[in-house]
Image (cartoon, rainbow, N blue to C red; front, side):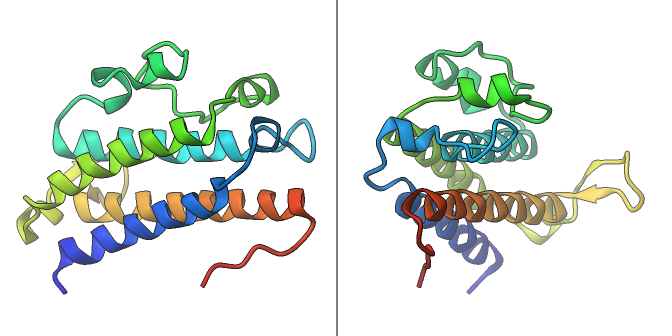
Length: 173
């Protein structure tokens, strides 16, 4: 297995978990929040896909699918490339109410773009510095691992919320 294959597999595992989490949930359950300051499954899924889209688009040197492919409009939102959910308060979280099909369609579009980029991946590309605000500076490889980690954490949170809704544990094999 080469590096690109390993990264593709990691992103695909997030996708598979989201498929399980979103499967069959009606809008009220996708929007469920145990507390007004908690995140919903819809928001968590939207947010992790926005972060994925933003970071991988930056690495690949292209516009985000959110803007260039019209996903913001499909979600009924402004095409602001900075809006990833970071800093959202209770009202903004409550305002993210797409259905599961739209959430997965956006996830799939972003994943397809990521897989296209991964076809071009080289060792030199993984070592390319993309952010000098940190010490040590952030490389492409470090940023990709960060995206996978963020996505995995949020997909797990969404699975937990589904478990709360169903009042049982949610396991993945």
